[in-house]
Image (tube, rainbow, N blue to C red; front, side, top):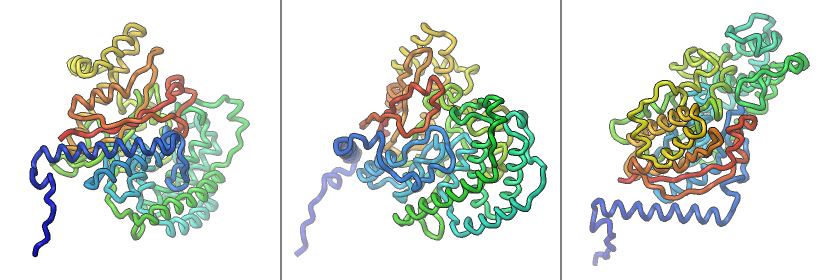
Length: 468
């Protein structure tokens, strides 16, 4: 006698109603798990405990890095609620914290950024990993550095003598020549990151702010640093962190023969111009990202922070599309980012945006009433963000989930409610806010001397679903 299997509701009605009900249940599970996690540990979103060496966070001090375990917990909640998720995308990847967190789950990871230095760091963090070859290269590298007695300086750009003492420039040049002798591209990329941190620490730029700002002349004269010694020290330390990071991924079964078991694609792209899509149809199951909170020039100057390190790196080693055009000025990368161009505002698009988002409309009018000179930069940023959202929604599958981390900022003494504006923009495109949590900014390294970023004390984590 045949056993009688219970027929599910979705088999009886295999249509859109069943699909909608399925995702309503998934929404409920996500809400329940986020609430449960918050109740069990009130600090889980603000200052969770984690081993920084597991994520290679310390081998370059990239601005405003997210806390990986916060992202990992949110990703786990969404993936456990929706087991059909196979890939993720981050269109504002930065140093690839979201990708590093997603790699623990084995899903395919896609990340994009406009900053070549972010691309370099991301490619190192996501592999392939050559631990033994790196250790061997370390010995040969140190030997080559010691044997190089040349005083030839490998770079020449406007401001070279302002930002680097002559002896530092000579030492950095010897490091550059030694790195170039390494055959393996992945290992060279790792070494370029170590050099980038060495440049950051030995330049005449202040390290207390992400904007390029020279130290006082007396302080520069009294600084006695060795770029070679700093490079060797940071290399040894980073190799330890590198091994810990790879061992951690290996423990989860996510590394085989030195490579991530899933697919990873990282591209130097400007997401406001379009999102990479490997197919002709909507492709991505999950979005995890944290966009800028305003134009980079007045929030976090990622481009300026990257300008000096990029001068010393062979850009083709980063990406074939990374050219000297990115270094045309100290602000070129920031100019290309969201809100970086204020002189070409599309008035038709602006009027449409003011209708879509009542919060933005009220904010925009308040800024005009307070300080008319600053309303254009806010409008330019929101317009570019909205343009990027259009691109994102084109490549996301129906009923795909989105995890956004975003904070508010201040302009002309007024708070720009980015979170509310983002909610209204996403809802206008067919997205639904599933749940949200607030976290204090404690572990996220911001530019404390920037009067705008110093006021960013909280962030909102927003989880959306693109309605099908």
